[in-house]
Amino acid sequence: MKRAGRVESSNNTMSSPASRFREIIEGLEPGIQVAILTQDNPDPDAMGSALGVSYLCSRLNPEIDEVNIYYGGAISHPQNKTMVNVLGLPMRKMKTFVPEEHGLVIVVDVASTGRKNLQSTDVKPDIIIDHHRDDPDGDYLLKDIRPIGATCTIVTSYLREYGLDLESNEESSLDNISKIATALLVGIKTDTAELTSPNVTPLDFQCYEYLLKLAERKKLYQIINYTIPHYLYQLKATAYDALEIQHAVVVAGVGIIPPSQRDAIPIIADELLRMEGIETVVVYAIVGDRIVSSLRTTNDGIEMNSFCHQVFGEEFSGGKMGCGGAAVPLGFMTPDDNSTEKTRDSVWEAVRAVINHRVFRVASNG
Ligand SMILES: [Mn+2]
Image 1 (spheres, rainbow, N blue to C red):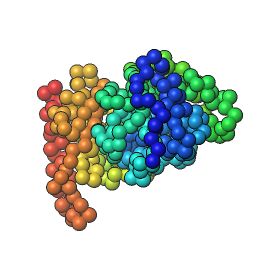
Image 2: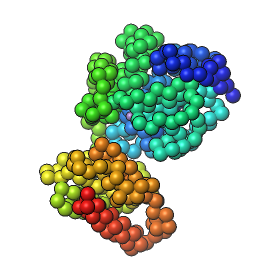
Image 3: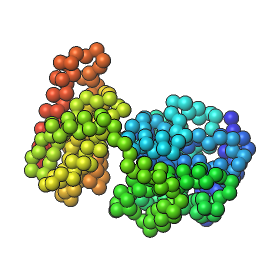
Image 4: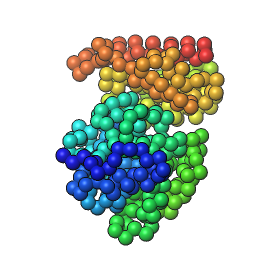
């Protein structure tokens, strides 16, 4: 096993994160394998930054044997699936990740392993590149966590700082370059809601503009206008059929759905939030052994984190800036494959009654 032996584990505060990253990668022993880990259920920003970092590693140090990207959970959002297919992203399942085979572990778009957003492994990373608030203690070769629109922006800024401009790169094929630019661009687009979210910085704008010139328009179009699977229309129909509205609050239960359809929940929540007269949305379903929910609000009087806690419990939910989520274990009450239709219906009815009641009670007390 080769570890990142030649690199001193010190935080060189004199150099920029980009130059520190370069120093680490260039200092790796020949033949080393690098692992890039993304959050569980990775989104475009996670996948785009992973691809970008993988490109940087191979460009900065051609002696690296392999760079592999791993993810836990599932890629189930239809847009994310489309991105993987259209760009041919080399995403590997976390269960195939053998830590001992990798001399360097880089975590992107999530700050800590073994915790909320990256539960699928607890391997300690050497490098963290992220833009979330979570800032783990500990000794890392590099920790670049900034309040910025997207992790893809940080990665793009490294690329530009090195002068590894995609435009003038003769070693990679044009196809590869446009693929990386497209992936990074989609990451910035989706994580910043087209540069409209409050955490957007001038650097996000600069990188967006830079990538837009290089991205492949046709692939970009395919990803933005992704094909919507039939089940999503069915689940939307179920949700609209079941929705209950009180004042400006809408609650919709989608029923018992398979994990591969889990992303329907936030998609429906975003759509319902646009309904005339609606300020707050709670959409939920039973997914596997959990009640999974997405919450949204445009009402400034509702503090999302505490709203989530009051409805779903502190341990199982959280939120910020108008967006929240919950995953409450059903435990013993989980319907399994042997459960009869009647049992499943009864469990769902109980869940539905409890949640709808609770949401309206919390909303009216708020
Ligand atoms: Mn992100």
